[in-house]
Image (cartoon, rainbow, N blue to C red; front, side, top):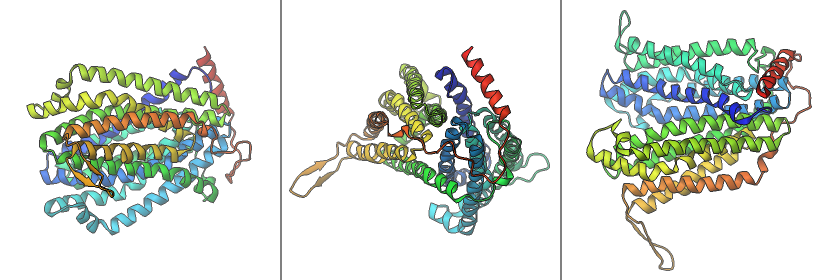
Length: 487
């Protein structure tokens, strides 16, 4: 990302990430599809695990957001050995955190399920599922570490292919282990957990082979697998805001869903369909944001902050242009877009209102996500977290309360304020307002230029205890790649 035309480079990095995000969605849908053949209680049990699962994923993504920033900046600075050392420390940190979470989760699994609201048969099904999911946590965390390590070095395709294999294995195993096809017992939700455990375990084994072999931009050295307090502290300092970012998004989504539920099943169903359509745009914008993080990080490491800024501009403009096209398509056929998921006339009517209000803001959503990626690549994850918090908890949630609900409040001094009582459409307008407002904030913050200072120091010897690695093959590959781009 430090040489050649920016747009093609971004495209090469982003499309495997888009496909990987969509495959992760497909991964989850496959479990739900086959569990749905067991019982409604089984579906409810797996559904209850979604907020908890998102908390785990947010934690893993937070740790590895720091990995992307550090590895990309070291690679950009030509400090490949230091990048390798960060990879080893990331593996240590993710395995330690996931092991603690798994042990604590298994110890409190029963009261935890009761707190979430599982009762009766749903509790039994959820317990069978969650026990295996806790055991699979180290696999989940390691895969995020693997993906982030390669992504920081500019390789997004290898992790995508491992995700393809993992998702494919999960889809194949699900009916056998959940429904008891062939000689296998019908394990229900337990079988769904086992399928996830086995498929993720296989992807982790392959990922470990890739890291130990090297040749994909970074390499895992066994001699580096000793705790380095300075690097671990940096990973935690940079990664914790990204973790809090994910948690804030998760809780805000729960709050907004609770608001919508107050306006009846039609509004709730329309909201569910609308969010599914939006999730496609999030997959695209999130992937471009991740590619932007790599590009910005590498260019800051190479001491070319102006090119890093151009990477962010090209990525943001391209994402917004693409999402404007998607908006135009959806607004041309709003009812048809809703009917793909549901045919109920009342739901379709409410869904059309949702799309007409929210779809024009998709480009601004995408722009914010891309700029957040730029901040993360620079290692300024606190700014990315602040933008998420401002977008959701300062703009979206309060605006929804003011616009959607009818209420009256008398403030000190006799000042009376009240809600507009617009109903569900007030929540739709809150989404649009927050998207536009947070985009303006993100652009203004980015233009301040405080992100131009990276978070690594180049030129010093690697802290890793192992010998310096011969990087001649990497240099030859880099020169050949640069020549092909110039041609």
